[in-house]
Length: 239
Image (cartoon, rainbow, N blue to C red):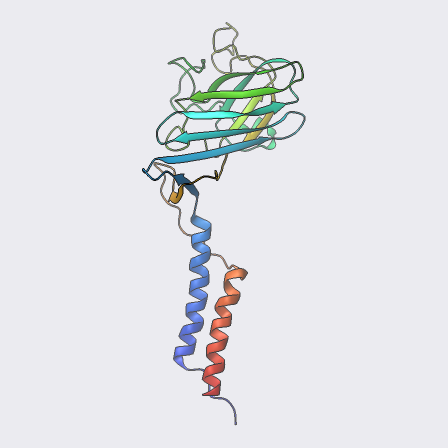
């Protein structure tokens, strides 16, 4: 005797398993950033960038609430001396540093130093390499941010071959690039997940709408769902 066809309840289980698979995958795709939060509600945001090539290094950015961004790390492989250190508008480093665009300058200002009122948001001044070509980066900046209109996530850090004259050198490009020379290293600024006794909270950059869910199949989620449906079908057949 042939087994009876599956009931509507089993078909609903199959559909539910597939739907759960898609929903879970959509949530996985659309979670953009997870920040750490102190018990008092202060958000601790962290980002980092890795520089690769002849000039190498790792730079970390930490921000507590609306406070300044603390920047620290090391860069090696540089010529001894001062080197322009900037945030550029695009995080595209796929073809080297040329595709990173100009300095991050959402307010359309002239180039300057980190302490100047007239400066690009991305103007972070210089880092100084010692006789071994290693620069220890230790600074903080109140104009850049890890969220909002001055947010630097997804943009690029660029290190230049020469000193940034902070707009005071009198060269034709002093007020645009600081006459800092070629781009010798770059990397895309990415979200970091710092360890610590904080609770996790999902967050998105300010002034950005949540993207539509990107539905896709996930085998790790599909297999358990189909397994549940198969058990239901076997139970129905046995009945």
